[in-house]
Length: 520
Image 1 (tube, one colour):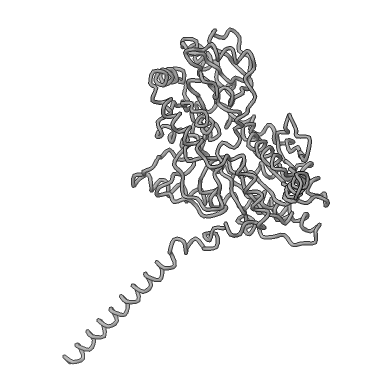
Image 2 (cartoon, one colour):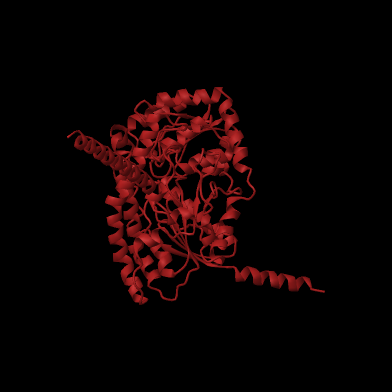
């Protein structure tokens, strides 16, 4: 009879045999985005894997076992803290720069370049003792990180924080159909009118035009400059960039059906929306707990995220907002990065807010947000209605989806923000349908066969065990774009029709000429 000790030893041997070394690379220098990377670290460590984590935001509470951190903050930590693009005062009067797609794409390429050229990252890459079983890279417009998987001769997995769109799906499948699924910079919600479909088609075409003819040349040069010497040190030629770009095994997408209607996705794309939300998050600080517990009229939570800082608002708008908040019967918690003197009694500011704990409190009435996908997902997770003040790219689409789903209102970023916000707050506070709908969607969101925190390490292990999961690979990757669109068939049909027309015309001319000869 097998003893319990023997079973335990065998179980440990099995776990050890499936423990892999994961290179996790998060490049974007936004604090809220780094939370996704830190969540991946926790998921993988709990599953028994060893993790090397490249990040511009070193973790404060670093795991002590099976964890190695590569600090890539040099040259990156302040890239989003400067410039007019991330200054609310400037954006109020210069909204035309907000959706500059080319500018955003170049940001993504520049961030990846700085990360790969970082001295600490270069030290890691030149350490010939380092071996990895899989590379997980944060995707943001550029595929430069895929060079790491080719360099270490292991599978590549992408992690994407902006939801389902053409850029992300093209990595493992093909672009979404613009006839029924809007682009990430769109304001449109399906079903689309004829003009909206035309607009979406134009947006898709211009996105890929910018990518192919403006962004890719930069990527080719950076890829060759960084990876040529690395591959040469191994005595190997540099793989073609276009080959490694589309060689990913899997794509993790941080969204869920409850957040908004989604396009059809392939088997190699997995929805893991909300994986960064820990159900056992730290409790509120004692003073904040008391404030929220005593707020019987509800709490209004206001945060513009970590990139667009409330402190960059003009003084006049800030003062108007404070006066408006002070007139409410609700308690207001405002994530504001600087100290504000003489606050109204019902207004409390926090330089960094424990957002999950605040949203999870039963007295949280409404969440005023910029509408980023992370915040939108958190609102659904906790079932809290939203007032959106979108600024940038996908935020407009996220808020429009939330409005379509019945749990949100939209307020334009303007010098009259305080007036519009008051109307929106009073509307949600007086109409229970917003909270009811948010709770309904939250139930849908939580009704999953397995939590994403468990699903992520499962698929990572599956990809490694199956040597890249080729059985999940979409056949669309092997079909040229003109064949997918049946342009070759259309060309054949047109050629046949033209041939028939030509033959018929020749026959008619021949008959006509024959009649003329007979008359003569």
